[in-house]
Length: 425
Image (cartoon, rainbow, N blue to C red):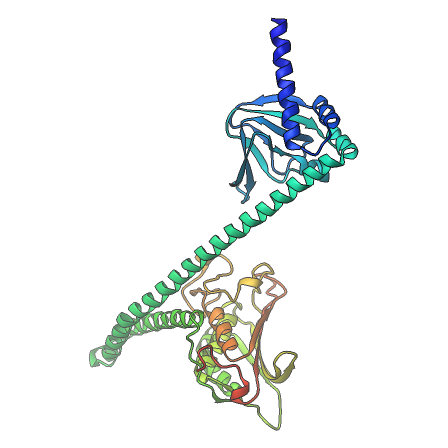
């Protein structure tokens, strides 16, 4: 029995030496034997975690027999992403030992596996005395890093293509849905006009109130449908811009009248500050599209301002490092503001700040809801005019109301000097 055990131990020893020679072929025989004396043989069943990502462990592993899988965590919930398999003759755990840091991945056995284990102190001592071993480890680590980079790039490319297909499908759906909704809404608007002019309705205040409510609802739906079509055109780069001489102050003044009733109902004051100048600059743009921009900015300012507050509108000439001579329009409210973490996303389509379920369906009520398209449309229109739109806010606070400031810059110049629409319109 003793002879059998001794023979088995010798076989394991010879196997481990052969394995170390295979893993580090440039090491001297003496160094391999020395490393083998520092190693211990251990066997693990399937499903055992040998290394845990983020943990500080001090063991180097060389697979004698079996297989392990390398996994990376990809979300806070603990979801794992498969990287690769390692088999007989391959090693792992060297990087965290060399840099004295946490494990960068999780290693789990996929079948019964036998490994050679060497502690950190022994590995570091061998690395100092055996440059061949250090060189082999460095080469293997670099190869793995290159493979990881290639796999990540391929995965990112696949994810990007999938997102593009989803975005394309979403835009197609928006366009089809908007066109399909436009027809029944137009019919309802027509019947509403017929009913509102009927003598019986004119005499009945209750009926007239119902018809007016239908009118407000259909106009709101029609506005949302048009916004859906606008954002689809912007994303598809088919937005038509009719470049004509425009007085932006005049366009803005017309937009202000649209909100007179809403401001009166909520005791909101819009203060206008216009720079006095002997010459009023023209820009070259589309007055209908610019009206949509100013409409959205004022609508936002009113929606996120408490009753009784003040909104400042400033128009003036300005110089910009990129655009040169510009006409600047500022809309500054004293509302609830925008949180710093939300600021990078406010011009993205469908983005909603705060809890959407708390929003009303009104476009001017405090924190009134909407489809989340207004600022995305505004940005697309301003950029189609060769201009810039920016936002600034100290933060979000529904009690202190720090406010938000939107700044629009439109270049002043000849039509041929302005940026044309993507299709040259």
